[in-house]
Length: 242
Image (cartoon, rainbow, N blue to C red; front, side, top):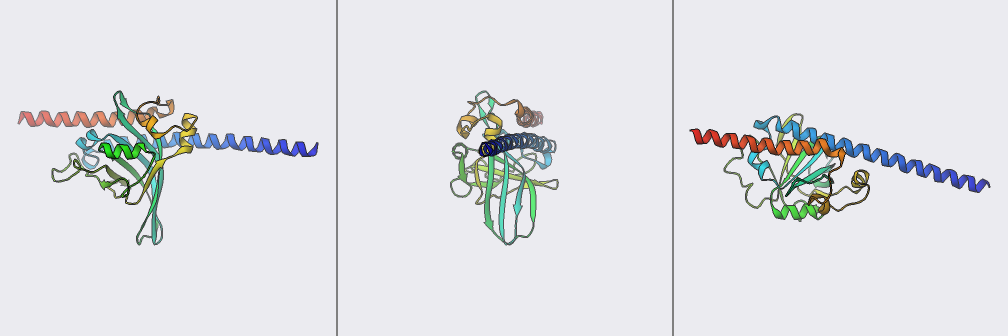
C-alpha cells in the first residue's frame, strides 16, 4: 500500500513537472515571437541605418534571433534561439523555430547580447535552411550584409552569397560575420507551439497554418516587406521625374 502511494506520488510530480515545462516552453516561444517582431519593426523604423530596401525585397527567407549571446574568454561562442519564415506563393510562411550555436577561436573577453537578422538570398541558401541543420562556412556561406537605405553598387550581395547577416547592439546596426555557427531546428519550441515536431521544410514551404501566437511576427514581416517595396517604388518615381 505504502509503495503504491509513493509510486503514485512520483507519477503526479512527474506529470505536474511536464505541465510546468510545457507551459514554460510555450511562454518562452511566444515571447520570442514578440521580440522578433519588435526587432523587425525597430529596424524598419530607421531605414537610413537598417537593411537596404532592395536587399530585403530580394530575400527568400528572414531569420530573426533576438538577443543572441556571443563572447567568452579565449574561446568565443554564440548561442541564441529565434524564428524563420520564407516567401511562398501566398505570402510568408508560418514561423519555424531555430537555434543558432557554435564557436570561433579568438581572443575575446566578456559577453554581449545582440539581435541577429539573417536573410536567405538564393535557392542554395534556401535548401540549406530547409534541411533543418547546417553550418555556416561549411555547408552554407554567409556574409555581412550592406547597411543603409540602398545597397552600394559595389557590393556583391546579388552574386553567390547564400545569406546576409546583420547584428544590432546598443542601437548600432551593422553587418555581422557568423563563421562556424550552426543553424538548426529548435524542436522544443516547435512542439510547444505546434503541438508536435514538424520538419522545417513542411513549415517554411507554407504547408502549415500560422498559429495565432505568431500574428504579431507575421504582421511585422509583411510590414517590413511592404515598406521596402513602397520605398523602392517611391525612389523609382523620383528618378523618373528627374
